[in-house]
Length: 93
Image 1 (cartoon, helix red, strand yellow):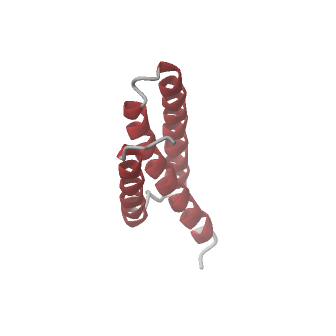
Image 2 (tube, one colour; image 1 turned 90 degrees about the vertical axis):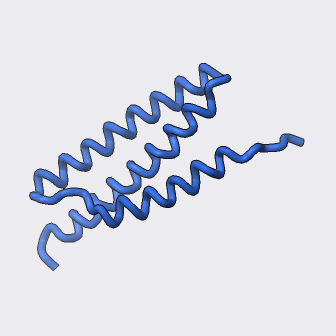
């Protein structure tokens, strides 16, 4: 294993996780439209998470790498699943 392989693998994991969180937060922003204070907090979190993803992408670029399409695709599939669960009606007892 090359010296940077472990760091690159970790950065790819981190980038995929940040992007999956972005997908979930985007859906949550839409779902919180009736609650402006909550929506504002989620939007702020979304903006910060986008910044994190860009920072990780920049780190990969500095190492001569780019984000893994495979890891990003798998994370996106998981995020879509999570977002769909948020769409389900919830009954409060």
